[in-house]
Length: 294
Image 1 (cartoon, rainbow, N blue to C red):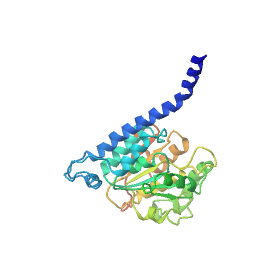
Image 2 (cartoon, helix red, strand yellow; image 1 turned 135 degrees about the horizontal axis):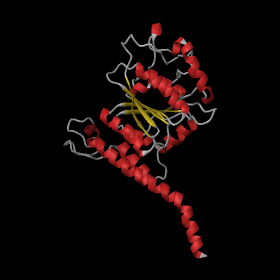
Image 3 (cartoon, rainbow, N blue to C red; image 1 turned 90 degrees about the horizontal axis):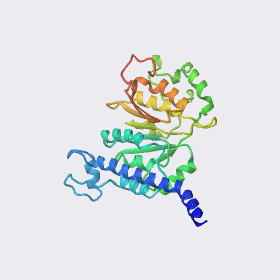
Image 4 (cartoon, one colour; image 1 turned 90 degrees about the vertical axis):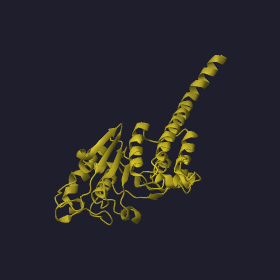
């Protein structure tokens, strides 16, 4: 009888034990990734951030920056892991490392936000989230470490097909022709444009955009149609040198996949890992020959 009790107790502990081991494994991998950010050449801008937190100023310090250290400690002591797999995360981490401190816009605030901030030391990382209560909850746990803004999405997932079939009938949604680059701020005529975002989102140009929100798994959810369209317009309107890296998660879902093919374009898809697609999208500024997103 005692053996049976022990067996049942052990079985009940399995899920929690597995979650703990998974989180620990993720923290160990994040430590390796974070370490790679500081193992750079003597001229790397990241060395400024390592010396600023108490490391030596001889260009050899490998101490993680504060956000990285916070992320490692958090995931090492938590049973909650990010929404993306390690393989998917590694794709984005490699790009963030190659760019150095960059401007990183993330659609979604969640269990992976501290990690994304940690992987962009000395850069600007901003999270856009639809649920104000969730924003308050996350920021209360990580004060002074995360920057997030509440946004409102005007679309619903059940509208995805009709929005896709009708957007070309609205001139303010189009890129080419006499209308030039589509605008976002104040563009109420285009239902796919996120026209009421905080001013700082429009005023900056983003090197990397991650789309892992809003919710898109039931009919009344906002869906990611507007987020994908808005990211596509931001990338086409870039004036800084270089491409915009756009990452889209959950491409196993039809709406994400179809909207990606329409606005982010398969010809700009450079990598696909698991449920993540990575696009490198060039600017259309100064190019008068474009007639569509793709």
